[in-house]
Image (tube, rainbow, N blue to C red; front, side, top):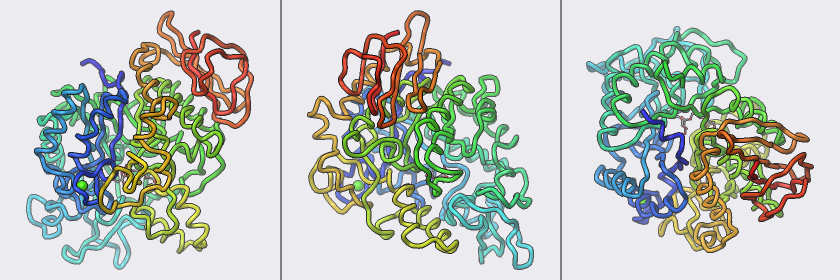
Length: 536
Ligand code: ISL
Ligand code: CA
C-alpha cells in the first residue's frame, strides 16, 4: 500500500483545549469542525485527535470508560461522523488515539472484573499481595507504586499510570479480540489510523521485582517484549492491513534498534514511532531534573535517529511536553526568530512532521502562579512524591513551571480578547495572559508572524520532493549550528539552523529559498537564531 502519510504534515489536536462552542469551558468536536478551514490554510493533511472517548477524565481522556462512544463533553457520535466527513471534504484525514495499555477503572470491564463476573475476571492484572506487602516493587510513570488494593475483589491490580488506569491483561486472548473490535469500529467510520498510546509496554513478561536503581523500577519486564511484538503483528494482520490507514506508536524508553524492529516492513507491526531521546536535551534522565539547554544535544539526538532509522516522526511538542520555544528557543529579542527556527527544523528533517496545536502560533509555557491552577494528575502526583523526598515548595514549583504537562495544555489562543476566542465561559484550565499578543487572529493579519511563516513552510514542504523524501546528511558546527542536506537526485537543499544567541560562520552558502530573518542573500554568517533553506 502507498505510504501517503510520509508526505503529510500532521497536526495534533488536544480537544479539551482547542475550541469550545457551547460555553462550558471545554473544547468540543463542533469546535474542531469550525476550525477546519484554518487547519486547511496551515497545509496539514492529517489531524491526530487526543482521546475523545467517554472518560471520567482523571487523565484527560487517557482513561477510557467506553471505547465505542464519544464523551458528551465533546459531542456525539454524529458530531464525530460529521468531523470525519467535513475534514475529508477538505482533503484532511483524521486519526484517533488508541489507548489500550489500560482502561479507566470506571470501564464496565473493570467494574465486572472486580466482581469476577465472566468473561471479565481476567481482563486485568490482579494479584494477591505477599502478606501485607504489594505483589512487587515496581514504580509507576506518575510516581509511587503500580499496585492498588481493591476491597471488593480483595486483590491488588496493576496500574502503570494513575490509579484510575488499570492495565489490561494481554495474556487473555479475549482482551485482544476486544481491541480488534474497537479498532474496526472506528476504521469503519472512516478514520485513517491511530496514534497508539504507550504501545511498547502492553505485554508484561513477568511480574518479578525490578532492578531497584532506574527511575522506572520494573520497566525491564515490560519494555518492547516479544509478546508486544506478537500482539502488534496480530493487530496488523487481522485489522489494520484491511484498511487504508497507518499507525504511529508512542514508544517510551525506546532505542533505535527496537524502533527498527517495530517499524520493519517485513515484520508488519507499526508504521512509525515517536521516540523521546531529543526530549532529553534539557534534562537529566527525567524531565523533572532540568539542565541548561544546549543546542548540540538536540542536534545530536536528531542526527542519531536520522541516521539509524529509515523513517522518523519529527516533533518538538505534544500534550505531555512543555512548549518548545520555552525550552529550546528564546524569550525577548529573539523569541519570534527562535519560534521560526524551530519550525524550520521541524519541517525539514527527514520524517513525518507533527505540529502540536498552538505551536504554529509560538505559544509558550503557562504563566500560572500556584499549584491549584494546575489540573494535571501527573503534576500533582509528582509534586507529592517530590515533597516526600524533601524538596522545598520553591524548588517543586520551579520544576512544575518548567516541566508540567499543563504547560502545553492551556487553551488555544485564537484571539486577544477575554477567553482568547477559545470559550465564552470559564475555561477548564487557565489561559496564558500572553494571548493578547500571541494569537491566531492577529498573526493571521501580520505577514511576518510565526503563523504565516508556518504556512509558508508547510507549503514549501508540500511542494518539495527533496524535503518529503530526500536523503539526509548532516554536520554540527561550533556546537551551535545544525546544517544538513536533503537530496533527491539533482534536487538538493541545504538547511542551516542556529538555535543559539551567537553568530556562526558558514563554510558555504547557496541561493536562499526561505529564511526566518527575511534575508534573501546570505553572507558566510548565520545570525543568532537564524534558519535558512538554500538551493545547493
Ligand atoms: O508525560 C510523560 C512524562 O511527563 C510521559 O512519561 C508519559 O506519561 C508517557 O509518555 C505516556 O504518555 C501517554 O500515556 C499516558 C498519558 O497520560 C499521556 O498523556 C500519553 O501521551 C497514559 O495514558
Ligand atoms: Ca464545549
